[in-house]
Image 1 (cartoon, one colour):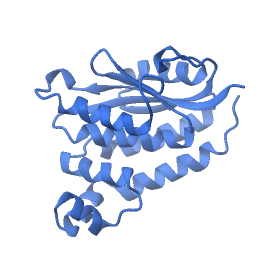
Image 2 (spheres, one colour):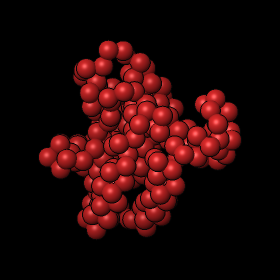
Image 3 (cartoon, one colour):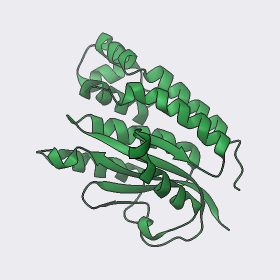
Image 4 (cartoon, helix red, strand yellow):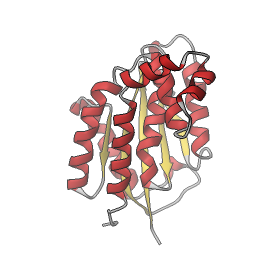
Length: 208
């Protein structure tokens, strides 16, 4: 039986100008939290990656975790396409598996530069794609401009949604007021509302 999954295809913007390889270690660590390599994720060509997400409802928050992880590093960002669909063939490496989720992700990824966006979604459901991609475009106005400190807070919030602001403050060794300010600037409440809406809508989809 074919599985209904999500696939994230991405690359790191500005990686070739980065002096330190710390971003790569951070990316590997983050992907490692989501599954095992190379069956569920791979990094190739130095700064490109692919991640299989078993539950499509979790794909968007994982993409945002990756974005926050990379934006912690100066002058770096990440470009990603989320493909939602079936997994027709499972290989030992995620890059060798196939199905509509993989083709949607790859095709959408190739369109990102032309569309001038850093995050978009593609599935067999055009109405769903149009709705979510419009929300993402609006959210990216903020997310693409996260500062390093905003991204740092965003990553902790996305990784640990139940943490209180005073706990985040202790983790970062800053004042709670600073966490509140950075969260507001990063529009984290609105972005988390978008994630919840995405999760609600995707649960209504049926594989085509």
